[in-house]
Length: 435
Image (cartoon, rainbow, N blue to C red; front, top):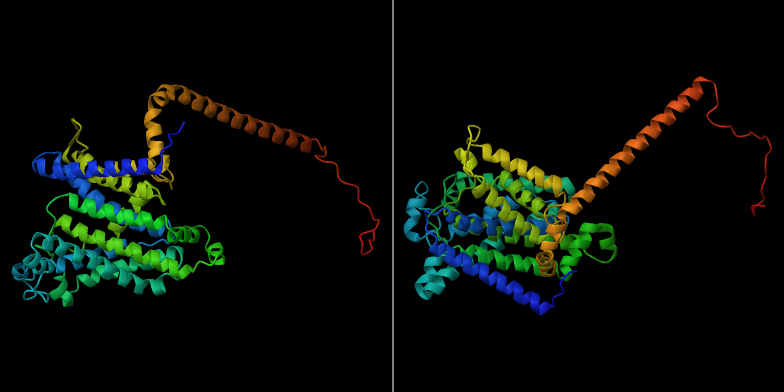
C-alpha cells in the first residue's frame, strides 16, 4: 500500500533533503583533502550538477515540447565565452591576450563591483555576467528560432547541429581574436571557491524549469508534443510556444556553459563539438525523455561512471583486479556496454516520463524487506510464465506445420481444400428503397 503524504509534509521533506545535501557538499569540499580519493566525489557532484542543468534544459525542448534540437553545445559555448570575457582581471589581459595586444575588453565586471561593494560585489560580479550570458544566448536563440522552428523532426536537428558547428568555428576565428582570443584558451577569469556554488545555481535553475513545466505553458508544451493539430485546434499558438520553449531552454544552456567555464578554469571552443551534444542527449535518454528527475539521475550516473568509477580500467587495475587487457581506452568500451544494457533493460530510460515521488520512495523503503523476501517466488513465477509462453508458441508452430502437411497431402490426392460456392445467373433488381 502506498504511503500518503500531504503537501506540507512533502515540502518539508524536500527542503530537509536539499539542505542536508548542500551542507554535505559545502563541508565536504572544505574538509576532504585534495589528495584524497574521495575528493573525486565532490568533483563528480560539481560536474554532475552542471550537466543536470543542461540536460534538463534539453529535456524541456526535446522531451516536453517534442522539438528535436541538437544545438545545446553551441549555446553552452556562447555562455562560457561571455562569462569568461567579462570576468578576466584587468592585470591579466596582457598575459591572456598575448597574441592580440591585450584584447579589446580590458576591464572586469567582478573587479568593478568588488571595489565598491566588497565581498557582495564579488559574487554579484559573478552573477551578472552569468545572467548576461544566458540572456545573450536567449536573444540569439530567438533570432535563430524564427526560421529554424518552422522545420520539423530530423531537419530541425540538422539545422541546430549545423548552427552549433558554425558557432564553434566562429569563436576560433582569429579576426575576433581581440575578443575571443581566437583558437587560444581563455584563462585567469573569476571562478567559484566552493563546490556549493554550481550545485546551488543549478538547483535554482532546475526548480524554475520544473515550475514552468507544471504551469499552463508547460501543459501547452506537452499538448504540442502529443498532437500539434489538436493543440492548434484548442487555440494554442504553435510557433509562439515553440519559440518560448526554445528560448528558455537556450537561456539555461547558456547558464550551464558559464558554470562549466568556472568548473574547468580554462575555456576553449574545441570541446564544444557534436560529441558534447551527444553526451547531453545520452544523459536525457538514459534518465528518461520527459522526466526532469531522470535527467538529474542520468547526469550524475554518466559523470560518475565516466570520470570516477571506471577510471581504474584505463590504469590496468580496477576493484583490486589486474589484467593485461585493461589499458587506456578500455574504460570507454565498458562504458558503452553499460549504456547498451541500460537501453535494453530500460527502453524508456531509468525514470521513463515519471518524476520523483516521496510517497513511492517511502513506500518502497517500507516494502523493501517484503519485496526481497518475495523476490525468489516472483522470479520462479516469471520463469514459469516464460516456459509456458515458449511451450504455447512451440505448440502453435507444430499445429501450423501439421495443418500445412495435411493440406499438401490433400492437394496431392486431388481433394478439394474448400467447397466452391454455387454460381447463379439470376439478376436481382432493387428499387430506390432497397426493396
